[in-house]
Image 1 (tube, rainbow, N blue to C red):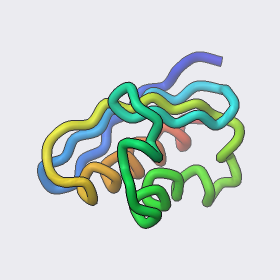
Image 2: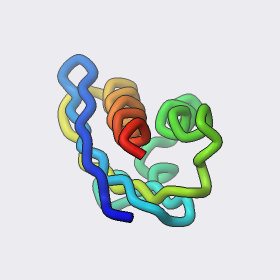
Image 3: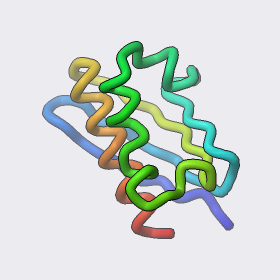
Length: 88
């Protein structure tokens, strides 16, 4: 299975997600998403798309995101991951 990349936008935040088969690791700008986003609400936003389709442990995600604030970035990541999951 190959890597699928999709983008997501929210306000001024732009995220590019690279999703491939794996073990559930999520990395944002080279850092684990739990270190990049410090609140449980933002953790929920990032993992929500994968949780809805019960694929949290099936894919590895690498994301680059810039612009906007923390909430906008987390929601842009959620959209990018959702678009990539649709491809699978």
